[in-house]
Image 1 (cartoon, rainbow, N blue to C red):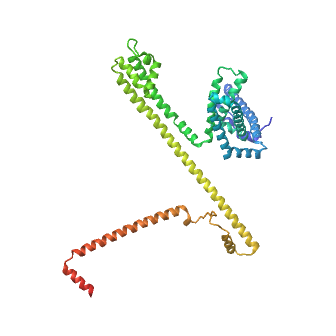
Image 2 (image 1 turned 45 degrees about the vertical axis):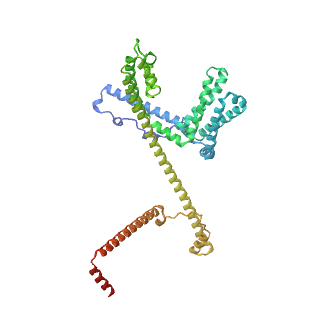
Image 3 (image 1 turned 135 degrees about the horizontal axis):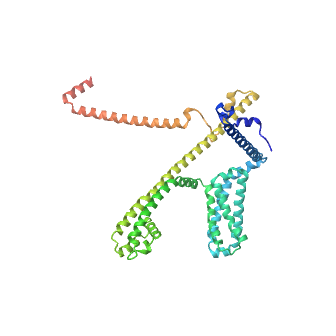
Length: 430
């Protein structure tokens, strides 16, 4: 058994502060010494257990870290994360869902029996291969992802009919249930769709709020169920089919909450001359349908909008990161070209300016160029264009003011006396 170095255990001091020194003089009685020894023995035993646990777990950790197939692991990881692999999985699941729809027709099932068998074998093989590849890439962290656990659950569902045929035979009475739950295979599309994952996150965030709303709705239905049973479930002249028991009252109230066939329920009560039946029905529909159900829908919409906004922010951030990476690649390539020009200058004997001119001649208008100058940045261009727009607006306003001033002066000249106008004309002639 491997033993850890002593320096490791010196850092793991599990003793209490007062145990690093002898017990005080006031605790010199035999009972106190016995307690001190028992505690020391307990701590030393606990320390030995920790040492044994570390000696067992550390080799296991090193066992997983000693993988010698890093290149193969990296290759399989790239395959799993590639866009082509995702397209293959989405196409496979979608095709299997379409064939499942065709399988529900007995005529098509009889005609294409071999096609269904071959497609089933291919689908199971692809799903099993995907599971094996993901476990091979990351055998520990694979089980920490909820979507991976969903894939494992679906894989177990896929193998249930085969196990039942082998163990119980083809005529097992519950075999149709195992075939019916195969419709859950389409859930394998969830890990490959970010939009669906966003909606699932939104639904998960509404669990506590929706639970509160449903609890209030259940309390409301409980109160009205008791009232309905006492008012309309009497034996003599009551509506026993709808209000004869508490369970029937709950089911009737659920129909009223969904506003499904509530007029027929009210007609049954009106036929028995219950005077408070209409007030009871209208009050419950207003509270349950127009308030609680709309509250439920509002909560779902709010959380869905928040999740969609978060998803859009993540997409925007990813685009910015991708743009920065592309910019860095272009800058690196330009720097390499400049370094190559500098090396060429030392070998050929030309000046750097001459090499730059030769380099400019090789450029095309389609070549991407990243310029860090402030005058060529997008924010500066945006501000500059907005400044030009403001300047044009200012010039237009000044022209309008100029036209108004000229109009006012013309009106003033028209209102002057004729003598003053003649004197003005003489002055103009002089």
